[in-house]
Amino acid sequence: MSLFKNIIQKFSGKKHTPSKRSFEEKYNDIGVFQYDADGFTITYEGKSKTIKWNDITELNAYKIDQMTIDRIDMAIVFGDRQITISEDLPGWYQFIFKTKSRFPSIPKDWELKIMHPAFAENFTNIYKREAI
Image (tube, rainbow, N blue to C red; front, side, top):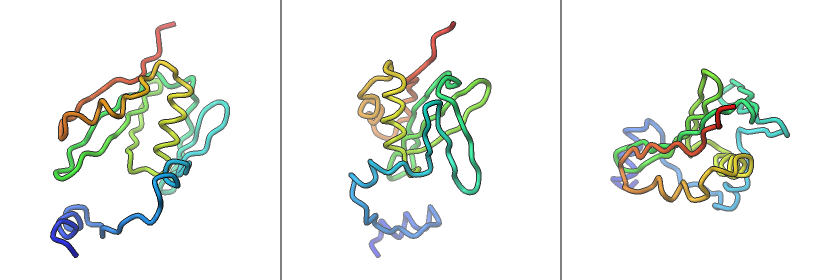
């Protein structure tokens, strides 16, 4: 095991194993999400949460500095509550694709913009529902 993988394992408590899935397989996987016309359900670690698209008031994206890499997270705000998901969550890519389809005002390139500069939080509000 390389020194880098050994360090990651010690800090994360998880053994580093390379993914055997291609990017295309990861991109097309809906993962922990189930979708219908009104919204989606996330089922993870035995818990489920259903959110209707019309209830989402904001989507906020930002990076988390994990010492050696950055991780992109998204806070999904609905009413006075929010849940946070990360790019590590199975189904992330399809969720991003679906949010861009559902909310056309979301910048198409927000992921690229949020990546720079490296190791900076770079908080970005990518969607905010207009006041009615």
